[in-house]
Length: 291
Ligand SMILES: *Cc1c(COP(=O)(O)O)cnc(C)c1O
Image 1: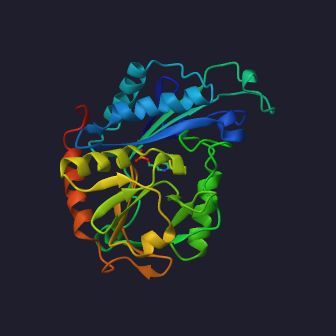
Image 2: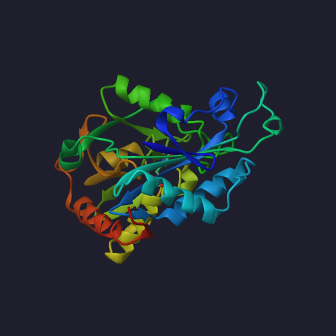
Image 3: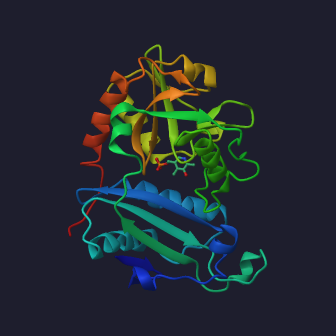
């Protein structure tokens, strides 16, 4: 496996960074998770834009142009001869001293690109749907650490994940500090209620997922009744369908929430229709490459 590390492609065993890197010491950095489908990097431009937006927000200077970063992603895929891949793009503050001050990280930011193949959950969960539970840890408030920043500082989500696993589930439903439904640990959430597809507005504290936006585009194309709407756990309990979206998980049906069966307890027709359209979209919407 070849890893992109600061402009060079190196063997996995050589892909090492300093213990003084502030990404390691403080989670000071940003990242993206991207997928390619049959030599097409899905929504690569959107991912690159979001990466640079996250970096701008934390005043992290990425030492590559967006074009060069796009080329670096493609180069990494080609070097690993991957037609279908999950790509992890990480930019950290770089090597500094033991203090917090990012100005002490005098060199360039650290840029890492890993391309591998992963399926987040077993196939049976995609077919039959998964069970999730609400966890006590609420999503970070925007005034403290804005969830729009895809930050390396992922402890908020990891705490929620631990609580879900302790509760016997694979994924956690996270509320915001007001008690409204926000998102899951690395996925956005959708429900279908009385035929209307709904996802919480970004103002509720969820990251604006690229898969989420793709699903909203699909809903428009299919002329489904869809909207961004504030909702509570109760609305999920009485919904007909529920599913999660994210680059790694893609689109996964949820059939049980806090012990309540959702609809018939099986992936619903709207979920299946959107999934079918999503699969079509991954075949045409992205940056092409050859291996
Ligand atoms: C990355 C991420 C998502 C999903 O976003 P996509 O762009 O669809 O991959 C959702 N929530 C959180 C907290 C994330 O980090």
